[in-house]
Image (cartoon, rainbow, N blue to C red):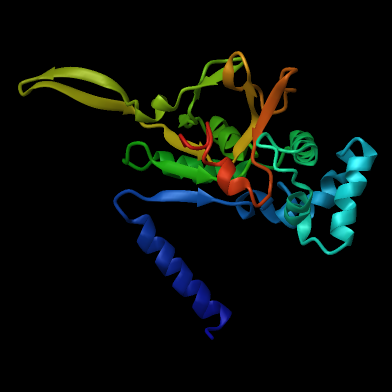
Amino acid sequence: MPDADTYLSRLEAKVSEQLKAQRPGYLLGAGSSFLAGEGYPLAFQLWDRIKDRIDPPDKRAEIQAKLDAGAQGIEQALDLLDDGNPAGGEHRLLVTEAIAGLFCTLSPPLDHHASFIARLSRRSLPALKVFSLNYDPLIERAAEHAGVGLCDGFTGHEHAYFAPAMFDERIGIIRGTHRGKQFDETRKPVHLLKLHGSLGWYECGIRGIRRCGFSAAIPAATRRLMVPPQRRKANDTMTHPYAAL
């Protein structure tokens, strides 16, 4: 087994090699938002951070009972309480709301993410893609902080709507040259694809899939679009809007 220094050297060499590929993509998991405890909690920390937000208390007690009986974390506890409802049972919806409520109160530092997204924007590649499994808005806030264009599949203002065709759009100017018309890209936004949903995403029965402010309350009679940690999440991501992403 290689020692830590040898492993780190091999890892850095492999990452450097992959970053030089023609069309690299980036996949971000929970660790990318943890920030040594200054960011968002990891999955195994979630229950302790959200349990006091679960209301009514009897539903909180039912989840806790599964954990006390040996369930391995909130994911397995929700599986054991799953009633098979396609829209998700009450426990699942309560956990999603509790996670959103917790995350809305957190404002982690943006320095690392702003540096990351700024470096990506300096690459000459069009439509460079960042895939994220996280709900938090660190990448979006970092891009805004760094003045980097970002496309997340939504367009609009107060209640943006989902328009995945945006990922196929290019921004530029058509110039007349001696060779005829030529398209020059003037802006190359980074494409952010949030595969498990995000803070502010919700589904309205009338207006469809929308996004409001990250820390704003979603409108009444709508459903948050965040895939909570649970075995059925593989099936959830085959539905709209996740399937399009």
